[in-house]
Length: 375
Ligand SMILES: [Ca+2]
Ligand SMILES: [Ca+2]
Ligand SMILES: [Ca+2]
Image 1 (cartoon, rainbow, N blue to C red):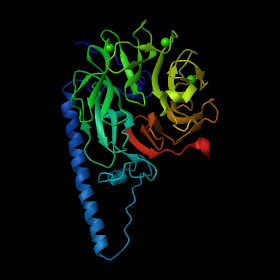
Image 2 (image 1 turned 60 degrees about the vertical axis):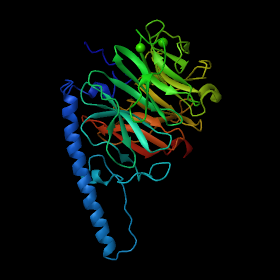
Image 3 (image 1 turned 180 degrees about the horizontal axis):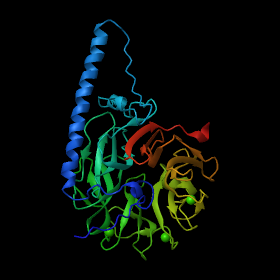
Image 4 (image 1 turned 135 degrees about the horizontal axis):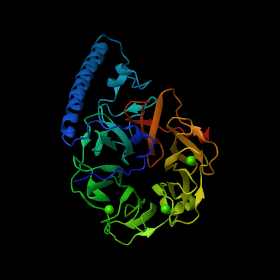
């Protein structure tokens, strides 16, 4: 079957433009996981050795033991093994000293989303031409491929507000549609009715978990923002501009947040910019105004601003702006280091994102979100 072209939000910029083909054959999926497993075995061995060392230190009478988990630089290989080794006991992740890297296999990683309990990140892992939804335990442990579809692509996984369900897009049935599955990858079912023949991507749940907001070319072939109750074929179209309107995300308080209920990106002004609108599509407001690409918005739950991705500095970085587009600040500016596909946790405390050295593959990171707008 001829593979449909990738249509994900970052397909023509950022991650996807760099993700050159690495084989691309379906068989590569199985092969590609083998080095990952070997690598993980090495990691586990290293962790055991580290525990022995800690134990020996304790026996030597050093008293207070402080194990610092800090990854100061993405290219310091020796610290890669210092990820947390035990499941986080608290409802939120162990506090990263600066940021914690969650992936180590050679796949291209993108589009992370944190579970409501802070224990799990889902993301897309791409072994060349076969992205799958992968589950990553924040406290350490084996990544789990939840979809394992070597002949189909998956995109933008997100958790339901109660954490029981993952919504994601896939082209497994020919065109792109949105599906639901349990958090272990079981019980895959269509999220909506009336999806056949058109493309639906970028799902995000409403705060009550009963409906999705998503992008589709359903009405007239160009991308618009829609919302629909789960299982329903009665969709409400929220944008009608002939330009592409894509990648909606909702504020944590959803429809009660007035003009900042939904953030999305649109090319209606000639290049991709961030826009806000109410849950019913009214009160449209443009946030960014820059000739560079601005996309992947995530509304800060306290309403202070928006987190988004931009290449305005010449490299891909995560930025924060207030709701009027002022106070634009890059979260990280390091030579040869790029960030992509940021997403805030529902409480705004954590930021998950893809990051990597220029020319290399991207991995998934989590860090506590320090809002520069509140400084
Ligand atoms: Ca479809
Ligand atoms: Ca449109
Ligand atoms: Ca722009």
